[in-house]
Length: 317
Image (cartoon, rainbow, N blue to C red; front, side, top):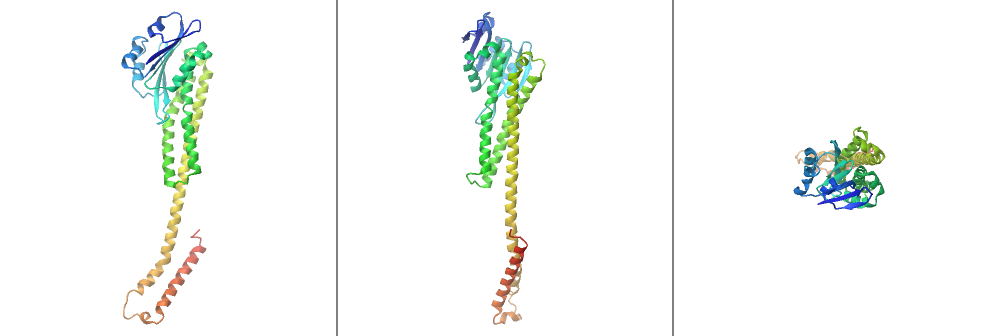
C-alpha cells in the first residue's frame, strides 16, 4: 500500500495525491510518501519515480540491516528498527529524507509510523519544520515503544526476586535465564540505535539535522537511559543467578555434611556388627549371657558420644 501526504505552499494538507504529481507540482512545500508492505510493483516507484540509489533500494528489500545513515546527493537514507513487543525482535523501518520530502518504507504494519501519520495534520511544528521533524517524530515513536517491553521485564524480575508465588529454585533459575536472553535480544536493538543517534548528532555533513539537534538529543537521551536500564537489569539477573547458585551449593553442602556425619557415626557400629557377625566357634563373647545387650549398649554409647562431639564442633549448624 502506498499513501501520500503533502503540505502546500499556503500550509494546507493534501492527501493521496499521485507520486508523479507530488514531484512535479510547484504548489507543494513538502510531502510524505509511506510504503506499507508494498508489492514489488509498488516498490518500483523508489527507482522509477524517486530515482533513489540502487544500494539503498536493495537495503529496503533485504532485511535485516543494522541501523545506519547513508548520505547521498540530496537526501539521507536511514535504517531504523522497530521492536516487536511479543518476540522482542526488530523490524526494519527505512526512511529517505530530503529537504522537501520524506519517504518511509516498511514491510510490516508499523504502529509508530501510523501514530505520526495521524498526528501530522494537526501538528503545527511538523507543518513548519518539514520532513526532518517528521523523521525525528518517527524515531521518537520507535524508541518510546522500546520502554514497555523493558518495563515488563523489570516487573517480571521484581516478582522473581520477591518470589511471591513460592516457586522452586529450578523454576526461578529458568526464568532468570529467559530474562537474560530477552535483555540480550533487546540490547541488540537498543545499542545500534543509540550508536546511530550518536552519529547523527556528531556527524558534520548532516546540516539539516543539526538545525534540530535538540529533538534528536532527546531521542539519544532516551536510548542512553534504555541502555543503562538493560545493563542494570542484566547485572541484577547475574546477582540473582549467583545468589541462587550459592544457595543451592550451600544447601547441597548441608545435606552432604549431614550424610557424612551419619555415615561417620555408623562406621564403628558397622565394624562392631561385622566383627560379631562372623560366627566363628572360638568367639567367647558369643556365649556370654548378656553379651548381646552389652554390645548393643556399647554401640548406642558410641553413637551418642560421637553425635554429641559432632554437635559441639558445630557440624549440625
